[in-house]
Image (tube, rainbow, N blue to C red; front, side):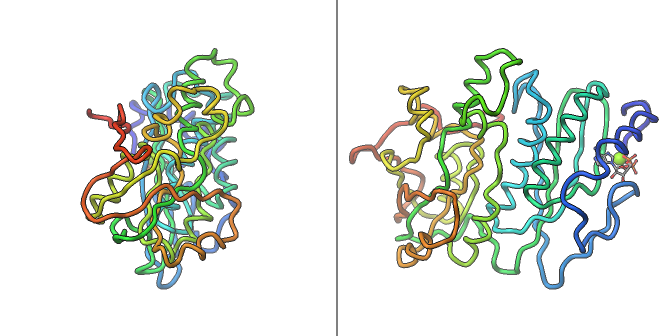
Length: 328
Ligand code: ADP
Ligand code: MG
């Protein structure tokens, strides 16, 4: 609900929505009754399912550097938002987009819309509504998904004796962001480094999240950094999480590109959108038998106590930074 004076001018605003945001993503699912164009979207929830919803905002200069390619702004914003559904074990359905733009630049909008469509189709979600206003560049995405009652993967279920796992590699996105900050805007290209690719196109681990339903005792996605996010499981589950640095999975390019900082980046760099989860030791074989292409690594275990303890060669490790916080 934006006033004409505050938002992009009225003709452009509706033309812009029509042209770039009416058919983004997967073809309409059977639960979508009414999409973009009316005052609200209408969705028919599948019988017996719980609605799982979450919203995420990214702001230029805070979450991505100025001049960052619009295709990747869109892919990151939607990937990060959907990662919360993955971490709950939910199956994604739709999303809405609140876009604040300094100007209605056609080539920027086309690239943004293309990136959004690419991520949306890959994750089988469609855009069903939103809001568009003029102002400093910011993107808010609310995602909707479905989960069986009592089946959502919460942060609170870790039990003493469970093992701690992570998907993929850690620190890649932090490495990618460091590379992006060091190079000219023209060099932003996702093929330029696998690290940059994880930063710019963070495909969420939706398939794995769904497979962990009924198997993982707790789960979170790594958005602020391993230690920071592990602490959320520790607090919610009232347990201690022990992480062994030697087990933390890192991409070869991170070890080579940042030999001195790689482990620090893997422990406290954010934006990887991997899943961090606990599984009872007795069910470890079931986990390793999952048909998934995503690497899964045991990085530690759940102990009685509190907080997160990082161990290197048997000794407690002091990390310089624990993760990203907006109001530190
Ligand atoms: P209202 O004033 O009732 O909020 P708007 O003029 O903001 O309606 O939006 C008109 C229609 O376009 C609505 O269906 C809204 O959901 C959709 N819409 C607006 N901005 C976007 C956007 N960035 N992406 C997708 N749909 C949008
Ligand atoms: Mg509106």
